[in-house]
Image (cartoon, rainbow, N blue to C red; front, side, top):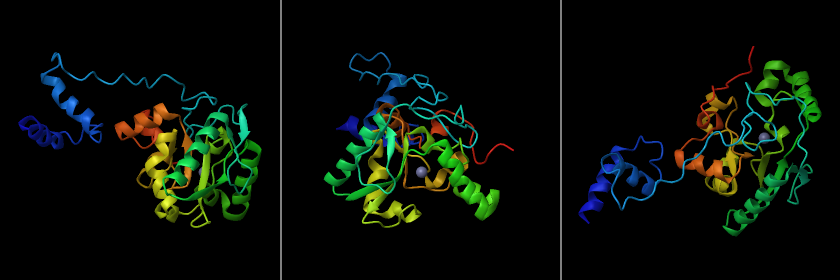
Length: 250
Ligand SMILES: [Zn+2]
């Protein structure tokens, strides 16, 4: 009992530690510096290798695309796209691994009481993005277009690993208030279990270059999404120590 009380008191002192949100890990971290050779010490979790997969290769599920990191080549198209058999607005293609995870995530959302959802938009080709971005430029000018749409070659949707999700019946589709729907709340808390990341959080616009998009989810695989959750990093830029990408290079 006494030891428990001491630890409970100690833990808040280490609240700034990157993994302080995971209680048991934080406690063993607290004990480690003075007690490294203790025979009953809990083994440290295996080291997470941040360079295990490429963040530059467009076929890598860890690829980081932002306003400073276009897809290369700009016209890249994934080779393993599949139609995702889920409710949708536009026929939704995703890379096979991301599609399977999305199907499992939709099923869990229903089973855990968050309700039904649909895919608004998933894979978008380079040429489709040329059309979409061109439409925004025509109606709102280049500055206006850049605030609403990614330039061709810079969209996560072109990776086949990203999708926009909305609630059914449709409410707050592609709007900030989606974050307050049962579906949006559930996704924000649980997407990581399926390898997905809420890619554009409200408080990280300066790092990502995008306004809060509670509907946009990016597949990175469970090992990375779980490690990001554990460390408290909410953007790929932070986790991989990349420069903030608030705007396109001049
Ligand atoms: Zn999106």
